[in-house]
Image 1 (cartoon, rainbow, N blue to C red):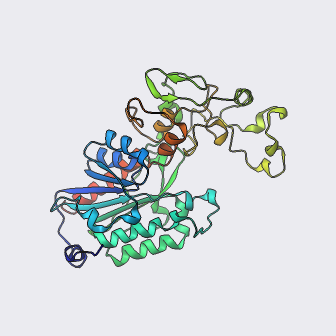
Image 2: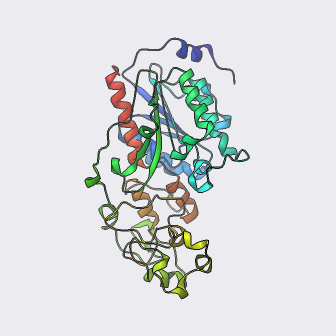
Image 3: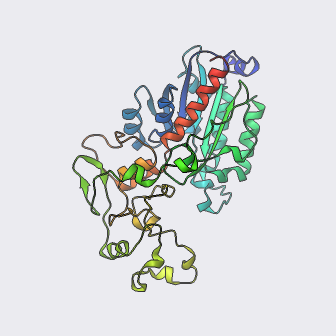
Length: 369
């Protein structure tokens, strides 16, 4: 779609800051980033994603924000511009799917993966929409790839300010109250002037731990569903895995088990180098990084610190800093572990979204907004 003259003029004639600002969330998922922005006082009017499963959690938990099932490749700047009220500062945020860039894919430039080009599409939207502030979040490994350099070149060509210090762009989540050993690339750029993410809110001594957020939840057995919260449900364990978790200790590995319980693949020479599965979390530390498979005992160090089961769907959501009231399934809907695990594991932690929102809000206030 052709870019309008009005949109081009936003780049050629920088505007004075306004009191009001509005955000649109691209690759919005179940709404972690949107919820965080709203908590920080940044209005969000729309979220775009291709996953229909995101619609209910996104709209139900984020009043005022409308879910749009549209691929970023079919989006245009003019379509996005229609969401912004006249006179409002335009904020565009997004988190392109990160598995392509993750360390788990060995950092390969897989040109055949269509997700590889999604950041280029986000850059195109920046050029077409001419927003005032842009924020993108992804895995730190993205900074090693040429596609990220192209994204930065777009921001520079469009007149944005952002930190060029690679280390300052990587956020350690416990520093901002998220009880999870998770590092994320957070880039915030503004046309108004220099901008950097706000200082950490939690010193290492104040980092939130697993016990701070999960200890008070009702106990569950493997395969059980709590009657008062259907999201507080744990996956079943086979008799073999039940024996394995009974021999597991917090912070330990499968190496702690009797040899007859160790999987054949781990007995091989190559398998001995993969101790980070079949483990329990530790009460007195932040959790491991929550993945889309966190509900499975064999998928990482996702065993409950005390109870003989993997963490529940609700516990995974809490570790991602979703509020206890956050709902992922509409009344009467199906609670599919794989689907809900994907929504939770792929989400931007809500508190990280709030940190981005507070950074933007502070920046607008400093520039007269």
